[in-house]
Image (cartoon, rainbow, N blue to C red; front, side, top):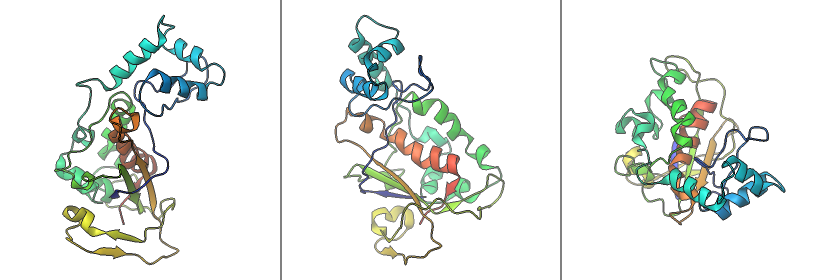
Length: 254
């Protein structure tokens, strides 16, 4: 997988811990996505969009019909991102800095295959997705350990995959390609020289019908209190590990 920072994404992907409900109390299962700051107005707007004509009553019902709904929402928002609740990004894989750096550079057994099937080798990703990533904010990666995440001046990240592997032991790469949704034309190697070991230069690619690159990106607000900013590392985890790697078995990079 290739990490490309300082790119622009038109549609940020938001994860909403605590205020996202996997099961709606009075309707079918679904998710309410809150955009903007975690406050009553943003939450109510999201519920109005999800429950036409009954957003306020549905929100109140899911909160237990408190006397002061705005105050109850404020408590939920504080609990979602309060002091001491964040989880270090290094605990997601729990395999150490070198593993994480190599994974985001296209290596490790997660990309290349190893002694265990993927769902065992990277099984912790599924556990984090089912628990921590939807209930607690994850801290942005340590940029000294993972320099590819340093210098995101445009507040955007894109992850690209060029291969697909089987869920088996050993160095198995599936004969299937990722679902191509991008064309990689060139890469400025100087932007990530500590990973690719090239101080300056470019990789330029000719267009081939057999090429298959799948890229997914997101952006976040410059407002530190905005949901997209507070939970940007949760979104990074979702697109780079949970969705593409575990959900689609996409691996490798350009």
